[in-house]
Every structure is written in C-alpha cells, then in structure tokens.
Image 1 (tube, rainbow, N blue to C red):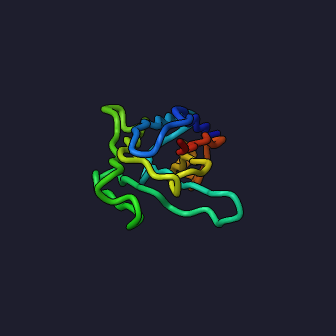
Image 2 (image 1 turned 90 degrees about the horizontal axis):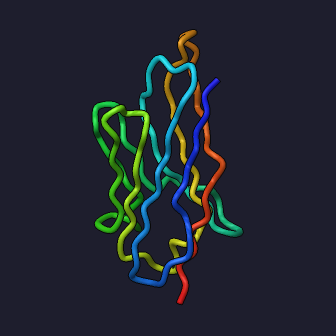
Length: 120
C-alpha cells in the first residue's frame, strides 16, 4: 500500500506565505511524479503544481511566479512554497503521487488534504 501525508496548511493574510509538505511511504518501487492539487468550495479539483522524477515542473497559470514545487533528497517528499498568496488561493490542497509499487503495480494515490485560507 501507498500512504501520503500532506501538512502545512493554515490561515494567512493576503500577500503572506505558506509551505506545504507531502511525504509518501509504503511499498514503493518508483515514483514517477508528485504534485499538489486544490479544490475550492463549489469548484472542481485542479492541478496546482507537479514535479516529475526527472525534476521537470509544471504549474497552473494562476500560480506561476508565486509558487515553487521542489523535492527532498529522498524524492519521497515534495514541498510547495507559496508566496504572495491571494484570497483566490483559498482551497483544500491535496498531495498526489503516481508510480509503481514493489509488485510493479501502478498507483495513483492521494493525501488527506490540508486547508489553506487566505483572508484578512
């Protein structure tokens, strides 16, 4: 089984910063990519940022230049640094990882979600 834990959400004023951390564990052979998605109230879940095993990154247009995704040395931890936060960034943020288990089965797993609220 694959288990993801995402932490770091909270309440911050507009223009402030937060960092989210996601750690994946379990019977993992390889991780192809990890990322953060978010879902605001009444909206669909959207990709925020993603990083592949090769280090390639992608961001949704609305966060480019403000958010930075990176990996830890073990590549089983991913960080999302969020700067210059805006009220429209308010959402539940979910960590995601895709890869293969030690049984070479594909996995696409999610963390439990962490709330980010940007408000004055």
